[in-house]
Length: 206
Image 1 (cartoon, rainbow, N blue to C red):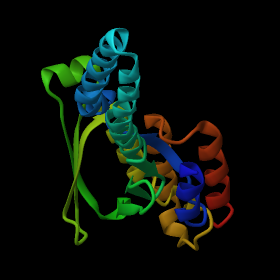
Image 2 (spheres, helix red, strand yellow):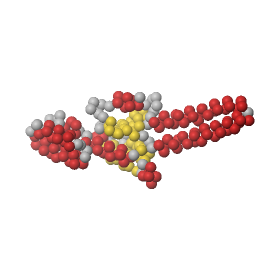
Image 3 (cartoon, one colour):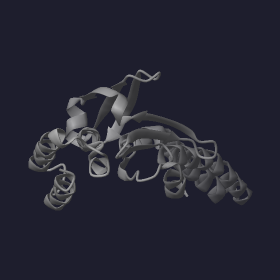
Image 4 (cartoon, rainbow, N blue to C red):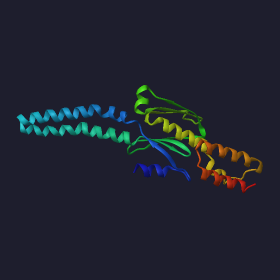
């Protein structure tokens, strides 16, 4: 369901490059108290039932922390951070969806911060500064923040690459475009096959 919702938001020729969530530490800290309460209730009701069998009805109380735990799990699962080849998207909400996205064209700077434990367990904060009305978009304690930041910066640098071959370019600009494409190829952002294809398309326009 989540995937179909995301796919429904994509524009023409837009594709998802990376999907991540907050680190599992965030989920664990949210449900830890509920796990402890559930275990204590089970233990307490089990002991009470041993001495007084009708006390078994007390197991109904276990549903309260279990339902709360399920809600926290679904909240965590439905909060996703997505990098496409055009934008960065944040989606939250189980039934009512809240979507915030930032166009890669308007991203001015990206700041990542990791604590000692964040580096050890691979989580951190990614702060995106944009020229849009949002201004600053902060993704807190997401998993694999280095990969997220790298995917976003690579997508921003590659932005417009897929359209280069279809645009009308002055002949004098084509050599510089090929040079830019070659730079992207050397950085590993575009493949050799992509480079050769776009190069051939640009040369055909000269």
